[in-house]
Length: 320
Image 1 (tube, rainbow, N blue to C red):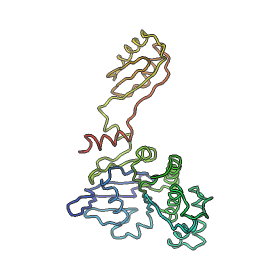
Image 2: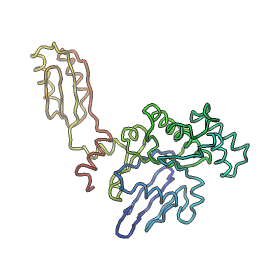
Image 3: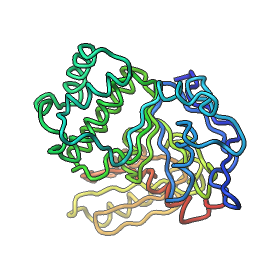
Image 4: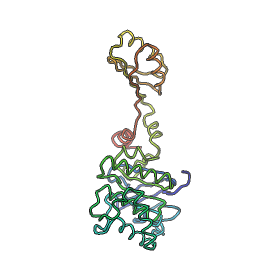
């Protein structure tokens, strides 16, 4: 994941007085799954349009697979596949026929297109629906067909806009697993725009947070969490046997106070919550056992993408 595949340098797009994308610097690497996050109007879609050569920057430079989409938009489209949030096909053609048509548009013979289409339909789990009219496909099936359609031209980059919108949880999970598999096995770079934070957290290697045309944060979830919550304590929660003697719970509290990094301890019946300046989960477990209490559960709260998103878009991160 060291080869740059998308490079944005001081990229800016302005419509009259509105700056839709404001001096954007970003590098995305081959085989990476990168998530674009931000509220509506943040600049995500405008950035995607410039990547595809469908909108010309006001200033700055774009390189996709080493190609300038402003001067060579057709060449970029040969290497980049785009899956919109509401993919459409010819309803009166079967899934197979739609893919064959795409293959022929990409200069394949009908035989080559058919062979490749059958292979891709199998790969996305649509073999049994290959001869079914696309107009009868469910939302999830259409997204799978859309992915197969994008793969017909062997793209180096796939851009997806809300790829699991309207798909049931099981179908969404399977579709995301397919995206990860493609990215890792074939080194395909995936640029994903979505509002489903948990899904983004599950599959993206890195994320970029957009607000008011600016890219205000870039990184993996762990590094962004450390940066945002550096001054906040770790929260370790433990549950012990409800029949534990009060005296032993008091003994435990005294032991925990002596652990370096502990800031606060709350004990409510059999539930113990420890606020600490660092991760002391292992020390807490040893202290509970050493005190003679029966440890029933132990967990550490970690800040995830939802916490990061809320901090930036509802808190002081807005001005970052």
